[in-house]
Image (cartoon, rainbow, N blue to C red; front, side):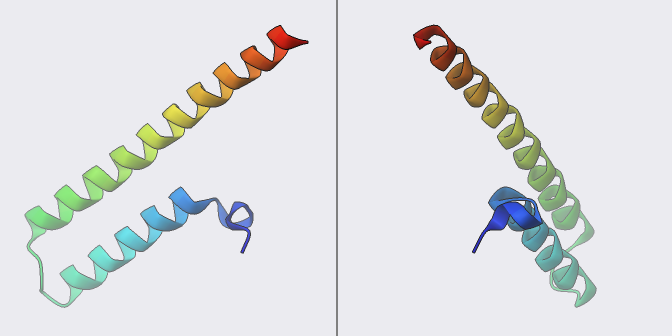
Length: 68
């Protein structure tokens, strides 16, 4: 399956994490504090992953340009 068509693996993982957290809070299985913590860390991990990926891709592009 090509995950790039729907936003990538990281996006799907973040979406599923938030969906499961929403379902758990709706059914009363977790508290508001747990919900906010999970959502906060999910968004932070997604942003950190995007920043790291861009840095790695930029370094790889620079290395490939030096070889040319």
